Structure formats: C-alpha cells, structure tokens
Length: 332
Image (cartoon, rainbow, N blue to C red; front, side):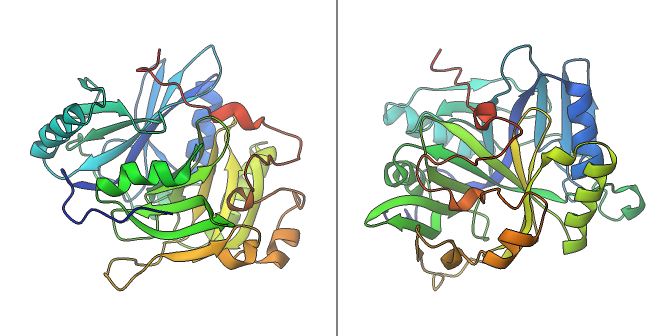
C-alpha cells in the first residue's frame, strides 16, 4: 500500500513548475503551443523556445529544445521555497545515496538535478527570472488561453515504491487507484489541489502527459476550433470529457507529446482531506462520464489517459505512444 506523508520533509517543495521537451520541428510546435494551447513565448532562439501561461510570472513552464532524434522529455521540474531548500535537498540526497548535481539552466537560479527512485529525471529550483503576467490582456490570449501549468503524469513500474520517494519529501496523496490490492495510480500534491504529480503504472519510464489549467469550458472548444483551423485536428485525442473534478481535453502536440487542458481544480489542503481509493476497473469511480467518453468528440474510440489499465495503449491512428519517453542524463 501507499506510505504515509512525512509532515516534516527535509526541504520545502512548493509545486510542479516546469518541464523540458524536445521537438523535431520547432516552428510547427511553436504554432501549436501558441495558437492552440495559448501559451506565450517568453524567449526563443533557433534551437530553444521558452513558454509560459497567462497567469505565470515565472519565465517559463515549458521549454522546447530542437532535436534530430526522437522527441523526448528531458526532465520535469519542481519549485522549492528558498535557496536554503536547495542546499538541504543536496545534503539529503547525498546522505541517501542519490546522485544529484547542480546544473546551469538559462533563466533559472541554482538548479539541482537528479533521477528519482523510478529513474525519472527531475530538477529543483527556487528562483526563476520573472516577467509580467498577461492574464488581464485577454485580447491577446489565443486558443485555449492556458493559464498555468498544473501537473505531470509519469509512468513508473511500481507506483507504491515511487510514491514512497515523494511522500518522504512531503507530497500528499489525494486519490489512488487499485487493481485488487496493487496500487496502479496515485495523485500526489504539494500546492493544495489534487495533483502536482500523478504516478501511473506502466512499462519503462515516460511522461504520460502534462496538464495546463484553462479558465472555462468554452476554452476547451476554442482549442479544438483552433486545432481544426490550423490543420492540427488530428492532435485532438479525447474530450472534452468529465474527469473527476473538471472537464478535460486530451491533445497531442506535433511531436506526439500528450498534454491535458483542464478547468481549475478543486481545493485539497486540510488534514481532513483524506486519501480516496478508486477501483481501476471502473472509470466511473474517477468521475469519468461514459456518455461524454463516447460522444464528445469525433475520436470516439480513443481511451482516456486515466483509464488505461496496466500496459494498455490507445488503439487509434495518429502519433505513437512512445513519443514522450524520458532521456536521463544521469543514466547515460
């Protein structure tokens, strides 16, 4: 079963912060993230583009890096509260036998990078260059008008073991799903909504998806309309579909990376907010509407990301599932 949360973690993680994806076609990916998702470009060069949401003052929540090889996720990133937390984190991982090192990352302060217990590449930073929030300039927002990064969902071979790594660091479990007595998925959070990090049982390691918050349901429709108009219509994988606390739209970017657009999540902060168990065999226990699942989009045969049991893959034409695998620098 899942381990308890450590109420006095060795350092203070505040939230899911950013990630780095590689792209085989930066120009096409730029159009997708600005025109369909609605992210704003913070900085770009011939080989790298940094994006942020309308509510975000941090310089970037998504970085795209050009590649000639397979499109991959290089790492996911979390913020810590103070610089001192980075020193405490470094000392903690060193004492725990985890290889961690400080790296230089553009537009970020000191950044500590390591692999977690499932060999997922992660990094921590306390500071990032700040820019003006653009949420009041609604006339500039395009597509879904994505407001902020919300969570990552990653594949791990053993959900309970991976959750143990994060629960020691202060993460709390809001929901989890079991197949019999085996935990096959868990939602973990630090910032007070159901998830900063979702762990899903699956083969190997990989980024299943990244989630961005939009303001209202009609923004999901705007994303579909923008995708259709700009000939990204095959990027629409599933939705809008009711999933737990909000409606969601599942998309694939031009390189095959999956992302989810969701409405603002519910609040999960108090000690009274206990862990909620779900049956992995019944998607309805997660609040997924079977009616919307069948009829909401032309892709009626698509399978919701959250309802994939074990090693199952969506059976549909389009981007290949392996398009979002991790590249671990420490494992090379």
